[in-house]
Image (cartoon, rainbow, N blue to C red; front, side, top):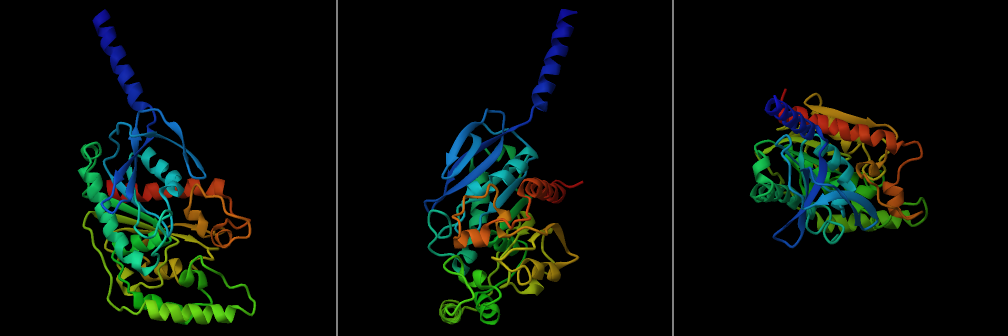
Length: 345
């Protein structure tokens, strides 16, 4: 009788242990170019408080991974971005059993912002493929993953990466042509964080100078594309997308989800997210339409923004945006999209 009781007790303890929520583990995988790929994964190890720049975060560093659902999602950060602004989404995905990898995009990250724009966009999809290789070669992670169906999420410049991996084709010349036609309506997309139009006498000079520089730098008409057969689902949030040939996104090669922030002043939705939506519907899915959100909704946690700065103007939340309510729901919907696309019925 005692032996039977012991077996039953052991079984109940095992079931209880397996029912415990998994924590967030994290590791750094060195890249060949000197950067690193940040990986988040399920673990049973205890988390500790972590400080990264202005962020107060929590995870278990270099902990033993626990098998989840066996799928990988790669996050492509925005221009000048870091992994830390995507920790909330990573945590949601890990809670659903995913492993999350965030490669550092060379020349366009928070440590080295030297070559943003089309120069970076051409390299980013290949860097995603290399990150998938990295994870697959890691002895801690490879046993818990199947890499035949990988997801890609990206916001802003990362959204450009996600659209490319969904089958989108673009060229620097299309970027140039968009800016020649629409620079006043889409100035931040064409110029970045260097300056902004303020409705004063300097605006005309800023537009003239920006057009001159863009015409000189971006004349290549070679079509850019990159296909990785392991990528089987893509979500693009507030993407830079005006340089894509709409025909290339009319029938995405993988399930494609879009997140639109209606009050985005950094990437005017009419030329970017909504233009993609118009091109690909009904072959793509609107994951969420954030009626009161701006461009910074792709960042969670949001970094501190200096009052009155260009960064605050372009990334700060509009007054009516309820971040605490909207972003957990958004992260849940993104996770559900990848569950459906990568795990099947």
